[in-house]
Length: 296
Length: 243
Image (tube, rainbow over all chains, first blue to last red; front, side, top):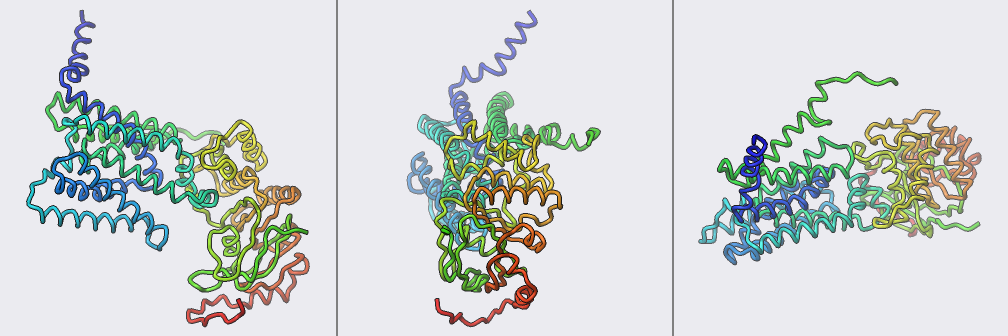
């Protein structure tokens, strides 16, 4: 009897919300797809020491999406295209500037995303229409329609295929850029292609989590993975797994506790990160639990 | 003797200031050539130019080798990157198999042999961040072996390396020489040059002497090299020598 009651309780807590409410199911599908694409991208950003680039890029996309809204209203197409144009322009411009001038990539990107942001805010202020800025910033994962889901799933698929093909080039570019440049003249292309993937994932993700929070599902799993593994392949797996867990647990938490879903997902990811920071093999606890050293 | 590598009135430098000035010559296939001279004399710049990392300010480099392997003085390898010794040795294959080509059992075997040859047996699974400076240099030599290039450009491969490791790495260079590869190596230790390098190019921005090491390494030549000004003349006039 006891076991049956526990099973029932678990069913109520974990499964019935998704069966009862289609919007929650759609949110889960969107979150899973987003995790599969964005988390590995985050790992590569981290390995390239570009962990903050996602954030900068998200700011660059925001004005484009707002402009799309300004022109076409609350339309998936216009906002996506606006975000993509803004994101790609900033990525391409800063990539080219860092290759061909003395300006390093972080400065180049900072300059262009600030220009983009200021331009966007100016345009929004000039327009009379009211933009739901909160929805742009923090998304609406509980209101994903078919078209948006399709967009997220397509971007995730494209990302996984592109990463599978570009894996070696990407790793080589992060590990030893000079050596990679000596081997292939396409190093710059790998880099720009990778930045394009970053933009695509951020644009697909902002419909669900908003332009700012989407960075959380990209970078927090990467940070978690770094604390658990010392080789790249397991890191990618751990990042995806923790993103999936954050999505599932975050949605359930938001459902049971009546919290906003997007932030709940990122908070769970943040909680996993903090826990890993302490308990993971390469976390803090190891420093304070000294093991005796080995024989020389 | 045929030569796949020749320099024609080559000037290399930065911001129009020459670091290598009007250098002419051919490097015969299979040569083991030491490049020596004072700091700032253009040794590294010459290798960079041959490796194609910088474009000539004047003249040209004729290089018909299908592939080359270049080991810079200060590479931009990320030392704490999460890969192990075997992975890094395997990256040497990319010159042949490209960014997409398959890495098979034979390739792994080659990488294993290279790791053994540089004396890092048993280190395959160690993260590269745990290697000492000398171990890292051995590993970079293993990667050069895996690259299997007919032209090797080594920029001060022995700086901050202990004598035992230098002896091991010199033995590897001798093996490459025997295999008929063409090797250019920037060195500061003239004793090593005398004993191990058949040919030398002494350069202090202007070429000073080029030929058999025993003929190049004499006191008048070395004095001339030292006397060449290292000063960076901000207001230098445009070079009038025929291009």
